[in-house]
Image (cartoon, rainbow, N blue to C red; front, side):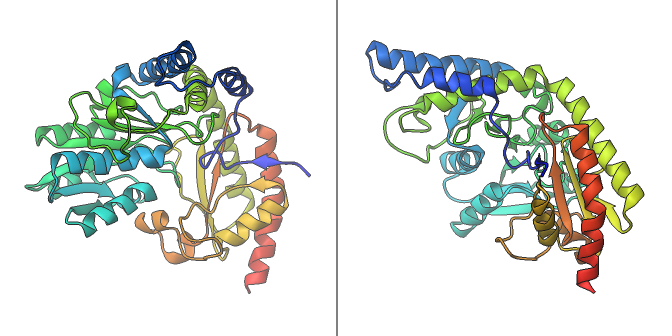
Amino acid sequence: MRICYCDNADSTQIRQEVLDVMQEASQHYGNASASHDMGKKSLEYIEIARKQIANTIGAKPNEIIFCSSGTEANNLALQGYLMANYPYECHVITSSIEHASVLNTLNYLYGIGYDFTLLPVDRQGIVDIDYLQRSIRRGTALISIMYVNNEVGSIQQIKQIAEIAKRYGICVHTDAVQAYGHLPISINDLCVDMLSLSAHKIYSSKGIGALYVRENINLQPMIFGCCQEYGLRSGTENFVNIAAFRKGAELATAEMQETENKLAELKERLIQGVTDKISGVVINSNPQYTLPSILNMSFYDVYSLDLVRALNDEGIYVSDASICPIGNRQSSRVLTAMGLPQHIARGGVRFSFGRYNTIEDADYILDVLQDIITNLRKGAR
C-alpha cells in the first residue's frame, strides 16, 4: 500500500540534515549555564542558533527566546505581556479562528479579570479589518492575530493590522507557526512586537519553539527558576533541539520559493481533479487567499472523521482539522466561523502538503477519493 502523508500542517518529517546536526550536538552534554568548557560548547550551539534564527526574520539575537513549543510561545506572549504591563484588567483583540493555545489562554485570563473581543472572519477566513478598528477601545492593550490559519491556510493582513494598532499605541502579537518557512517574514516590515515560531512545522524536532520579543517589550516570565533565556524562560536549555531548530530554519528559508512553487502545483492539481470527478465538494481554501501547502475541502453528506478514517485505510494521512475530541462529529470551529453551514462545516478535511509530497501523491489521492466518497455517501443513506 502506498503511504501518502498529507498532514504536514500538524507535524513534519525530520530532515536527514537536521538529524545529522542533532547527532553531532548530542555528543555534548554540558549544561549551557556551566562555566567550564563542556558547558560553553553547549552554550555555543544555543547562541549560534539564536543568531541564525533571528536572521531569518530580521530580528536581533537577543530578541529570540527559546521555549518548548509554539503553544508555550503564545502563552508567554499573552500572559507574559498582560501580567507585566496590565496586572489588573484590560482588553485584548483576537480572531475567532485562532489556535487553541491563544483562545484557551484568553479564556483563562478572562476568568481572572481580563476581557477580549473575537473578531469575525469572512468566507475566505480573513479577519475583518474594519471590525478590528471599531473594536479598539479605551483599555485595549494587545492585539493577537495569527499570520496563517492552521485549518484552512488563510493568510491574514498582519502588516495592516499592526499599522492600525500602532496608531493607538497597542502591542501586536502574531502566531506565525504556520507561516514560518512558507512566507518571507520581516519583523520590520510586519511591525509586530511579538511573534511565535515552532520547529516541528519546518522538518525539525518537536519540543522546541521560540518567541520573538521586540527589545523594548516587557514580559513577566511564566516559569521561574534560574536566569536562562534572559530570565524569561527558566530551565536547562534543550540545546540539541535548539541546534536542530536552527538547521531546519536555515534550510526551510533557503528553499522556500522552490518548495512553495511545488506545493502550489500539487494543490492546483488536487483541486482540479476533485472538482472534475466528485460532485458536492466545497473548496474551503481559496488559493488566492491561502498558503499553497494547505487545502481544506468539504464533501456533502460526509463526516470529516469518517473520511479521515477511510483515507487512513488507504495509506493517506490527513486531518479533520478540528479541535474536537477524538470521535466527536461536531462541525469545525474554524469553518463555522467562516460562515459555512453545518452540513458543509462538519465535512471539512485538511490536506497539508510538504516537501516530500509529489504529483504522484496527488494522483493517488484522486484515484481512491472518488470511491471513498461514493461509499461513504451510500452508507449515510
